Image (tube, rainbow, N blue to C red; front, side, top):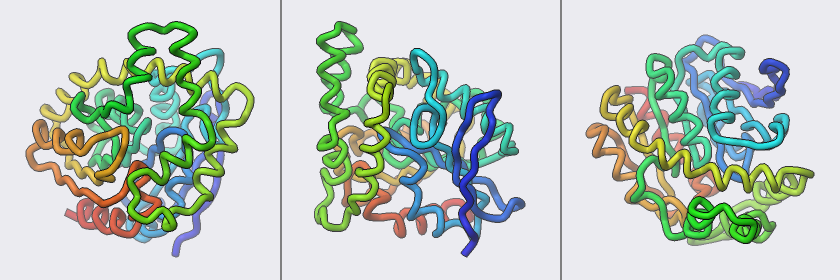
Length: 281
């Protein structure tokens, strides 16, 4: 087994923490996590792929061990930082694994640099309106009216019990879900200033929905090799969102697993096998 190293990159004065594993000359794979997690969500997946790929998994700005952004935070800013990060760590051509917030971040990179993307794996990473469940309704209300009351209502998503619920909802046997992931996420969420940054991102998520047509145009035009590995019981991103990729990429492969939002917590081995088979083609 190749060792995992834990590093920090200086991205023009901004520190990005990342995990790295695999041979430097192996095909490159960039792992982009989601809310409210960090690169630790890939702790079970990375060891299953290191013999085949050079893997880098950064903590997004404001998440995990990376630096906090300034006074506000947008998805454009997240993508700008990660875009520059890939250049600094020498990821010139790479496949991307995107999950949740990692999807609008990674899809922005693909639209900007289609020549750099060798393949896309989306694990509950949405790009279609039909993939958004009613669970988004409180956040949609904030998009439509950014009042203090609507912003405050979203703090419920930042409570410790909400994080645990995200990990366990839709999992047939919750005893299979380690409490370590949600406990670490809750530690990160409790740091000063993180709550306001996360509320900013809830509000700015509407920019991702506005970019869905641009993402879909990229899929239709470039037709990257595409694998969707989806927890079918996700309360936020519906199976219809996974199936929709085939509308623009007819050869896309869609796999569903009987689990929830954080599918790697219960199905890391199965997802790793699907990735190995997909990227070997």
